Length: 422
Ligand code: FIX
Ligand code: ZN
Image (cartoon, rainbow, N blue to C red; front, side):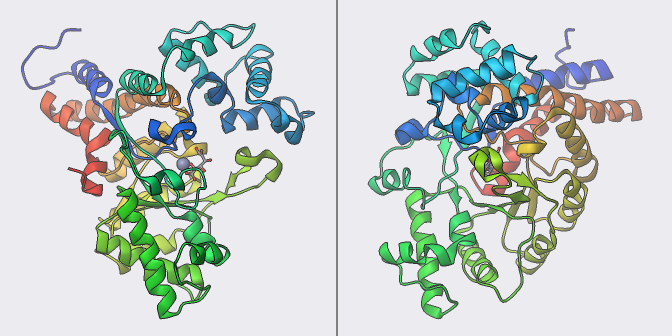
């Protein structure tokens, strides 16, 4: 259909067609990934062997073949693991799960012919590129303008790269991950002491100033766009625990002083099946009252939040309606499935209008940007299209400029504004 150059979109068909174009052409700022810039060398994962051994597919291969022992699987080389997953999940049965479908989408976007005999053609495809060229190719094809990394000062592989300094591709934005600092503080006290921070597993004034110094030092080193932590379903704030003290006396004040949001991600139950490693985490419904407490007690702070359990999504929208300093984002991990994304996105439009960030990718492997966003864009178009169609039928004709403006808000602008990136 050709849409006339005039401003207003007068019919439902015009609105839907224009919206689809706008969603496809608007560059995305992907606000939570586990991707790394090329200067982090081996930490930047890409290519078919990484793609097929994504931990979502490791969980699925163990379901498809219950005789497979996780220890035996992990003893295989990366390439052997990928071959086994390819045969089990793609050749011996139809690859209908969302994570399997993702691989087929990636192949399609890269022009790789899926081959039931093996993955060698896909391996040969990626081998043609340097990491830098591959980054350009994937970001370009996915129409993603920048991605936020996950950067943990306690990670032995990335820490030395930060300490050495250097130029990071500006399309990769740092985020300071504080799970270890917050959730395992007592355990890492000896390490912090070794690094020159005079902390103890207590709430003394010395620990207070030194713990704050650790955080601010890493903010200076990384220049993060936010602090982040994925959290268990229950978190004791406010209380007289060390974690509550770290939250209220260290993290919240430092975020406020440095004008940084804190991205909170509740609902993970780590190591539900430890033998599965990274694939063994689960979820539970979260108690979000500590989020209400933080938003109400610290109105000068900004909190971004994504929650893992479907059961929490309605409650989260209601909390967000009460607190302007809370920004819900994304359909995280076990929620990143079309049926659940559609349900959540519809609910967020109805309860929050445009004041949310509908999706982040959580990609661990660069190529996944191609499928995670390719699968999301039609859902956004359908859900937002329904809402705009309702407006047209009720007598409100959106203009093209209004549609462009608000699609940009959802895919990039809301995050940039909340994080103060412009
Ligand atoms: O905590 C997180 O940031 C989670 O997203 C990851 O730990 C998780 O393993 C993941 O990859 C989910 O998509
Ligand atoms: Zn993540």
